[in-house]
Length: 202
Image (cartoon, rainbow, N blue to C red):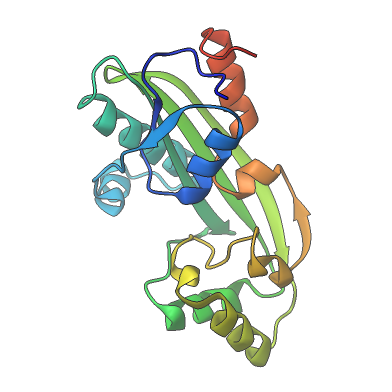
């Protein structure tokens, strides 16, 4: 059953299976078309330092990139940044980098800034950024190594080197924020916008 009113599915400008699942589970007909953009170059050229602003910029650029290639379609872009104080983190390139990143976050509280953007015909229609505060347990080298071994290559798939919906939950002692924000898609604000456009049947 779908609650999506448009004839063509919503486009998600991302290859994230988690984001696609969140939309599909909400009854929205969705297809994924990843945006082939150079995120780091766009970020560097922008000169932005605020993690929320960076996430919003990249979410918007992803949506715009796909939207211009699929006229008449609604396109959702999403991005997530991780900040520990003023330090920003990117997806780790390998398991060793993931281990070093988790060691840095161990015992600390970091912030996840999740942005969502909706675009049609290249024009931005909606943008929202949500923040979650994540406090990691103080982890030993042995505990970090055990987690890396258990999670495998999945540690390179997210900006925090963890998936909270999987074994990554064991890394944390406290979480403050919306579950959807942590998973990388501020779903409730997005649904609210789609309803305001009469795009949903509920």
